[in-house]
Image (cartoon, rainbow, N blue to C red; front, side):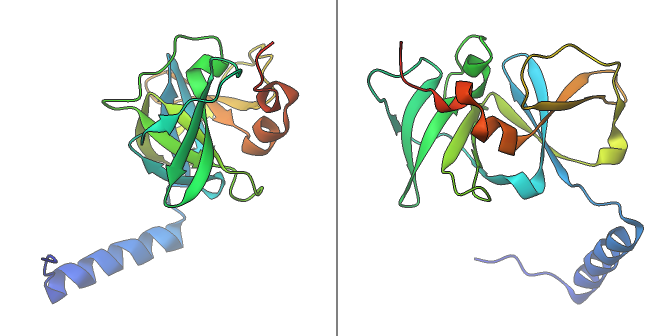
Length: 170
């Protein structure tokens, strides 16, 4: 049964949302953790976040290509995002999530991540000291107010990178 909202609650919620829209205080980033790294992705580049459904392994692929998942009738290639970076594989249970990416680029990919950490605002971060990072899909490096390092994911670069595209085993 749907929750009934009083007129007063509705008006307060609407006023708060309009105020946030006017002040620009909107959360345009999604935070997630993959292995021991924190990542941010623009909401425009991210799709749905869901508990990992069953996926079918694909033979003769790299260990980080976990297989194919059927999400509402559409097949998505599942990439263990921590495994792609040489970290231990993510177990697809508990807080692990599947983050759909690539819709804007016409690619059905899903990143298996350790956990989603919620919506964030760019104002919550400051630039980090430049870091040597060989991964071209790791855009800006940022620090939050607690000093934790965050990597900004450039989805277009990830989806176009030869390392990402070469899921076949050697």
